[in-house]
Image (tube, rainbow, N blue to C red; front, side):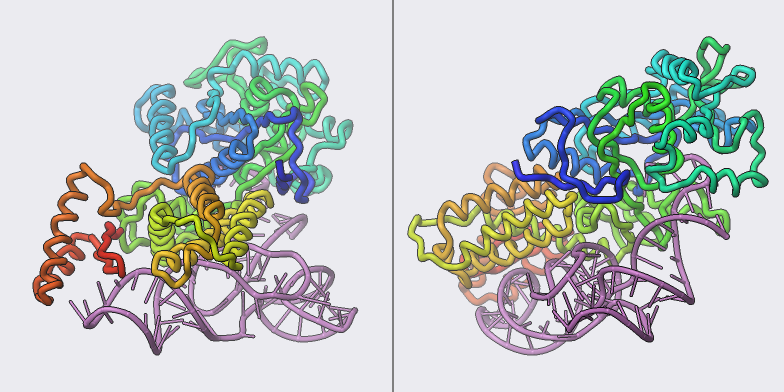
Length: 507
RNA sequence: GGUCGGUUGGCCGAGCGGUUAGGCAGAGGUCUGCAAAACCUCGUACAGCGGUUCAAAUCCGCUACCGACCUCCA
C-alpha cells in the first residue's frame, strides 16, 4: 500500500497515516444535532468525510465509520446561566415530543445524505441511547478529580486539568491563561469556578423535557460528552481519525479531548481532521441568522434542487453540487454562487460523457508505442498520489480532465487508440470508473447513448434520430433542423459525430 | 480586543522556492449542409510595499482588506 498523508489539525502538519491497528481504521465524525433541517454547509462537511471514508476503503482498509446523532443536551448559550436546549426549543415551537423532533430531522438528514450519495456510517449512535455510558464517564472524571459538583450539575475543572496535563489548548492553539484573562469581566460565570470550565452533566429544571436519573439527581448530559463516550465505546480509548467541521475545533473538540483524557488518562485521537466552511455571500453558511441583517445566509439543499432561491438562476442536481464540492479541497473554504454551480454543472456533464465514451473505446491489440501511453499512465498514477496527499480531490479531478481530453481525441480520431497499449486502455477504464463512482461517490445522472436497449426513451430516440438521419440523407435540412430544435427545447442535445449521431439530456 | 486563517486571471478553484493544475466563460481555428458537440491554439493571474535567494504566487517583515473561532452551528 502506498503511503497516505493526512493533515493533522493537532500537529498542524501533514503526517503519514499509520493506523493504530494495521489494516483497521477507526473513523469518528461529529454528526448533526437533529433540531433543524440540514443546510448545505452541513452537507459539505459530511460529503468531505464521505470521500475520506470511501478512499480509506478503496486503499484496502477495513474502516469502522462512526457518526453520531446528537438528540439531547445541545444548548444554546451557557449551561450555568439557564440556556435553552436546542431540542426543547424546537419541540416547544412545533408542539412535538423531543423524540419526535429528533426523529423528524434524523429522517430528513438521512434522506439528504442519500441524495448526495453519502454512504451510511457503520454505526450511527445517539446521545440519548448512551446516557448510562455518559453518566459513567462523568463518574470517572469526578473520580480522577477533574470535575466538581455544584447543586446537581457537574462541571469539568478545566483549570486543574490544564495545570496537570499538558493537553488542553493543543488542538485549538489556545492558552488557558489568555482565555482566563480576557473572559474575566465579560461573562457571568454562574456556578462555575472558572469561566473556562464547562458542564458535563446539567441539573434538570421542572420544565426540562429530556432528563434522566443520575447519582446527582435528574439531569441531562453536556453537549461534548456524547462524542467522547460514543467514540470510546465503539472505537476504543485511542483511535485513528476524528473529523468534524472547523467550527467544532473549539470548544467542542478541545473539550472532548479533555473529557477523554480526564476520564482515562489518554489522548483519544491520533489524527484530527477539520473540514472548512461553505460560504454564502462570503460568510460562513449558518442556520443562525446574521445579527446585523437578521437573515440566514444558509441555502437549503431543497432550494438548490428546486432552484427556488434568489441566489440561483436555476435548479441544480445533487451530483452537480457534489462535483462542485469535490472541485475544492476540504480544508479550504468554498464559495457558493450561481456562476460557480453553472460551471460545475458543465464540468460534471463533460466528465460523465467522457466516461461513457471511454467505455465504448475498443482496441485491436496492435500497438504503436507512443508517449501517449506514458502520459495516460502518469495521469492515473498522479491522481492516486493526489488522493494520497491529504485527499486532494480537486487535483485528482484535474488529472481526470486531462484524460477526458485524451478520451475525446481517441474517439474523434485525433489520437490513435493504438498509440496506447490495450493494458493501458483497460487500466484507464477501470481507474476512471473507480475514481468517479467509488472514490468520488458521484452518480451518473446523465441519460445517454443509443446503445442502451429495452428502454422506452432510448427506443424513441433511436426512432427519432433514424428519421432525422433519413431527412439528412435527402438534404431535407428543414426537417432535420426542426427535429434538432424541438429536441433542444425538450432539453435533449443532439450531437452529430463522424460515426453517427448521439444525444444526451441537458441539465 | 485575543487567537488563527485567507487575499491567485472575467468566475470557481489547485499549486506553497525553479517545470507556472483543472473546470466554466471569452477569442481565433479545424470539423459540419448550418449549428451544437469534439479537437487545436491563445490569454501570462498570483492584494500592496519592502526583504532573503542565482531564482518567490510560493520564505520573512510591514500595510490594506476579508473571514473563522473566542456563545450555538458542519
